[in-house]
Length: 190
Image (cartoon, rainbow, N blue to C red; front, side, top):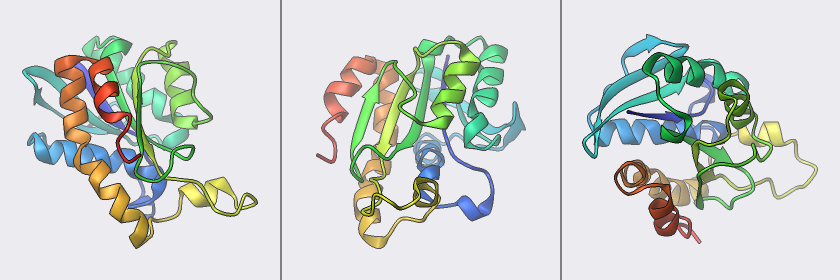
């Protein structure tokens, strides 16, 4: 069984912000595989179904970004999903807008949602799908304000293609493994 989660903040005011691109990715995946996100438990909205013949849970934690790990831990514990079978879609300001980088493990890279997951799982061995949202042009611009800002029309031209392959990434990781997905998608948007 796999857990595929997207990180973001639950309030409407955060819809379509850079920080919520993980939620957007889960929405695209759920639409492609007809997995309805209508259950509310484990501090998340989630649904279950099948991708590539494997049982999956799709989830959007409702804990706010900095506490995402609480929800991920609760789901993983309940369904006995090992960290290696957890796939997290999230924003990354170190990647240019529209770039994708997949990693099997590693540090939090300064991302508080990932930091929370590592802390709660007591493991860094889960797959991350980093979705590039770029960084502010002005180095003095507050990063929190930037990630909580909405995409420009120009950004969306690069973001939508990335979201449209989210289901292929999820399916590829499950069917062929993270290394295959890294080889195929780590040059996406370059």
